[in-house]
Image 1 (tube, one colour):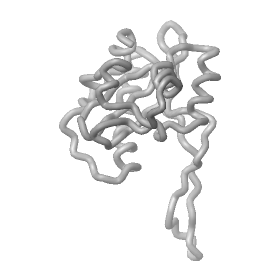
Image 2 (tube, rainbow, N blue to C red; image 1 turned 45 degrees about the vertical axis):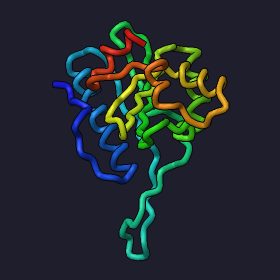
Image 3 (tube, rainbow, N blue to C red; image 1 turned 180 degrees about the vertical axis):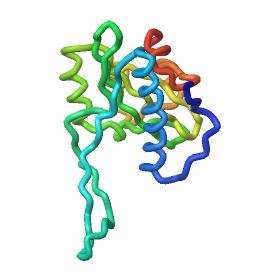
Length: 173
C-alpha cells in the first residue's frame, strides 16, 4: 500500500515536518524492498546529543555537513539511484538555500556513476510534491540570478506526483 501526500495535517516545526515527510518516503521504500521493486535506504545524518550536568539530553545537534544524501539505492537492473528529500513552506518559491553547496558537489561526483539523481521536493503551502532531476535544479541555479525557484517553474522542471510511488514517476523525468 502506498501513502498519499494530500490532506495530511502536520505540526509546524521544520524538523518534524521534514521528518514526517521522510517517514512517508521510508515506508514507500521499505515496501519497494519487500516487493523487490528496488533497494532504496535512508542514509542517516550524524547527530550529537547535548547533555546537561545530570546526563539528561537537552538538545540534539545535527551535523551541518554530511558525506551523503538522504537516500541511496539500486533499481532492479542494478542501476544506482539517489534522492534528496526537501520540504519548503513558501507560497511563491522554493529557496535554493534549502540545498547546501556540499549537496550540489556530491551530486556532481555521483553523476560520474549514474544519472538517476533526483530531488523529491514537498511544497507544503500548495500541498504538492515534485520529482525533479538534479540536473534541472543545477541548470536553474547556474542560469538564473534568483535565489529561489518560482513555484510556477516546477511545472517545467519536474513532475507533479499524485502519490509517493516515486518509481512510477522516474520514467517521466
